[in-house]
Image 1 (tube, helix red, strand yellow):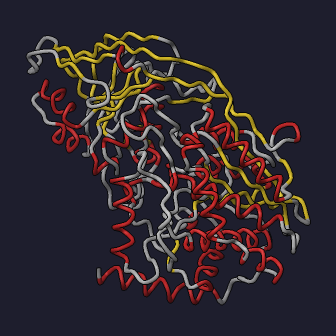
Image 2 (image 1 turned 180 degrees about the horizontal axis):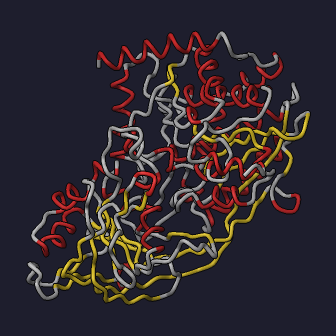
Image 3 (image 1 turned 30 degrees about the vertical axis):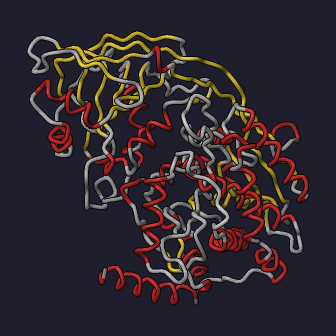
Length: 556
C-alpha cells in the first residue's frame, strides 16, 4: 500500500509538470456544453434501457430492436445528423445467430489405449461445459483425439509457439485461458494481458491450425471472472459476423477446471500441473490418449442488428473524434428459472447513456467543434465486439481522418470520482494531453487495477485500434469521493462476483451517476482538445497498432 501511495504521489507531481506544457482550455461556450452533462439524464437513460420493457437489449430480439429505435429517436431529438447507411442513423450489421440446444447437445471423453482414464466421462451442458458451433450448421458430430496445446499461442515476437511440432488438423485442442505469466514488459507486456490471452484469439488460432474443436480450461483467477459468467455468456445464442473467415470450429467450447482435472488424469496430471507446465518456455504439446465424442445441435438464423451512428458537423474536414459504447446485452432467456432478463444496467446501460449525453451536449452547438464529431452506439459487443468490428471495417469517415476513439463501457454508478483510467492512452501521442487534462481536473490517472483481466482487448475501442485509430476507453478508476482505494476495488470486485453478466445487473434508485457524468465531461473536453491540437494523433513508435495507422494513412 505504501509503494502504491508513492507511485500516486509521483504521478501527481509529474501530471502537474505536464499540465504546464499542454493547452487544456476549451472555448467557454464548449465548456458550457460539457458542463451541461447531467447525472440525472444519465440515470433516466439507464433506468429505461435496463427495464423489463427492453428485455435485456439482445441483438436480433424485440428488446434489441426497441433499443435501436430509442437511440435513433434520441439522436433525432438532439439534432444530431445521421451517419449510418443511406442517410439514416442505422448501420446494418449482418449476423448469424447460433443457439445451442442444450438437451440435445452431448459431450463425452472416451479413453484410448494407454490412458489412465479407465471409464468414459459424460459431461453436463452448463455445469460442466458450454459450446457453440462456429460453422453455423444445425448439427455437428465430432469423434476426434484431444491435444493439449498449453496456452494455444503463436507469438513469434516473443519466441513462443505452443503449436510447434503438433499436427492438430481434424483434432480437438485443449487450451489454457490467459497467457504465460510475465513481469517483463518485453515478454507478453509484463502483467498486462495481451490479445494472445483472450478467448477470441484462442479460438481463431485453433481454427487457423485446422482443429475441429477447442476446449478452453476455465480457472477463475486466470479468466478474471467465475464460471457463472461463462455459463451465462455461452448458454444462449451466440452471434458471428456473416462470412467471418475466423469462425471455423464446430465446437468452440469452455470446460470447468474440475472437468479438465478428469481429462488430464489420462496422462497422470492435474489441471494445475498442466497449466504450470504450459507456463514454461520449451513446453511441447501433449497428445492425450482420449477422444472427444460430441454431438452439437444448434438453432441457426441469419439476422441484421444495428449500430446507431450520428454526427455533429465541425468547422473543418478531417481530424474527427469518435465516441463509442455498446448498447447490447444478453437479452431474455424465458427458459431460465427466476428473473429471465439480463438487464445490463451497468454493462452497458451506463456507456450507452454517456454516448447519448455527449451527443446531446455537442449538438447544442453553442460552439462549433473544430472537426466532425461522431457518436456510435454499437451492437453485439457481448458476442465478441462484432458491432464495433463492423464499424471499423465500414467507418463513417475514413480511419485516417479520425484523431481518436473514446469508448465508454460499464462505469459503476457508485458516486463521484477522484480518479480516471485511460488504459492504452499511454500508447498514443495524445497521452500528454490526457495527463494535462487530468491534472487540471484534479483526477488521479490510475494504472490498470486488474492488469491480468486484459480489459484493453475486451471492449470496443480495440476494434478501432485494429484499423489504426488511436483508441481507448475512459473509466472511473477506484478512487471515489469520501472513500479510499480499497472501497473502490471492493465495489468492482463485488460487482464482478455478484452481478456481471447476470440478471442481477439491475438499475437501483440508490445508484449515484455523478462519477459517470464527470467521466463524460472529461471525454468531451479531451475530444475537443484533441481536435484543437495541431497535427494528427498517432500510436507510439513500435506499438502493435502503428502499422495499421500507417496503412490507413497510405504511408506503408
